Image (tube, rainbow, N blue to C red; front, side):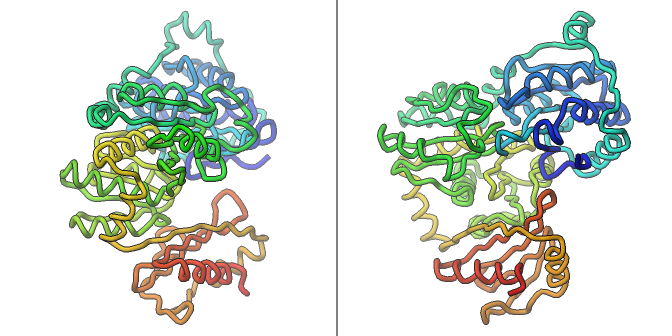
Amino acid sequence: MTRIHFGTSGWRGIIADDFTFPRARIVVQSIAEHLTTAGLADRGVVVGYDTRFLSDRVAEDAAGVLAANDIPVFLCARDTPTPVLASEVRRRRAGGAINITASHNPPEWNGIKFSTAGGGPALPEVTRFIEAQANARGPLAEIPTVEIEVAEKEGLLTRIDPWGPYLAHLQSLVAFDVIRAAGLTVVVDPLFGTGRGYLDEACREAGCVVDVLHNWRDPLFGGGPPDPSPARLGELQQRVRERKAHLGLATDGDADRFGIVDSDGTVMSANQILSLLLKHLLTTRPTPGGVARSVATTHMLDAVARQHQVPLYETPVGFKYLGDLISQGKVILAGEESAGLSIRGHVPEKDGILACLLVAELVAHRRASLRQLMEELTDEVGIFLSRRIDLHLKPAERERLLSRLEEPPSQLLDRRIVAVQRVDGTKLIFADDSWVLIRLSGTEPVARVYVEARSPADLERLIEAGREIVTGS
């Protein structure tokens, strides 16, 4: 078994290998100790779970551990999206939330996300404490628990349905009346995950004609990861074209990520959607505040920010850093290239449901396809083309790469590098705002190469140059 480690979004492991009932209890007990130390235990914890194998049973187990620590538990009555849990934490002024989920990972994975009292993912200073407490115990340490029925009778456990309050909150953020006036037809694909009964119902509340795919629980997610990437959206593309729908809207396993299909069946990239939504929000909600993006996210956001004379904040990878800027009220939108987004006034956690509704609002407001809107935006700020490749490394190759990156080149492909950033990984930036980012994964033996260029030819050339830096060839 590997040591318990919280990555960019919680602790994850292979079911029955790393992720087991005893280890999950150890992590929950460590979270309980954090809450007690921080003086938050008496405010209670919201507990939720996704549609994975035994997630509901692990959630009940987690509730029993919390109850044994005299911590009140608000246990969701059904599988629930991560952003809904975050919203419920803030509404109840709870001490935090525990979600049994592995998000967009393949079905053999599960994990635990811990949200803080502010509704956002726990920052490293919190997760380091939880990791230390968990790893100090043996993998089979006995953790006290209380039976669910006993916890209920003693008033330590309350079953909740957070749908109504969450919908009301969405209606304060999204112009449902604008969507209703446009009479949109949308196809929704929750990919067998927690978005079912949330995104489709919200679209109906907004007056859309809604067709739904994969809206039942399948712990195998149809045989692949519940990730709204082009590889998993083929059925959605086909149904959009068949129905002549305005949009296809998808969410991942715990509905914190989004996938968008345009009316012609084209899958739009997260970078494109973030850029379009930033332009829309700055135009329709002209309030003070900038935009935040991770180091791996498109610089088209920078161009839109310059166009509207608002500040741009760059963060390491991981929505916890972006969410912190939402909490501080510094930004109107925070986004990352891996399809995460939140906005001012919402939780400091990525929300795929909100993102999909905002796209519906954009299309309804402009009465145009996303392709048309993207053409307009590129006419204004130029073309930005992005791609990521993952390269597996042996330990020795990883060390050699780290050594090479200590002194990065001053030019690449006969082009001068005008800046080197080390916010997270090594980012080489050129004068035309194209760039190459090389970042080592914290959980896998992988080097991630992110590239953005201003033409298709340059994109291909920079991809190969990034590959050569990693491989040393």
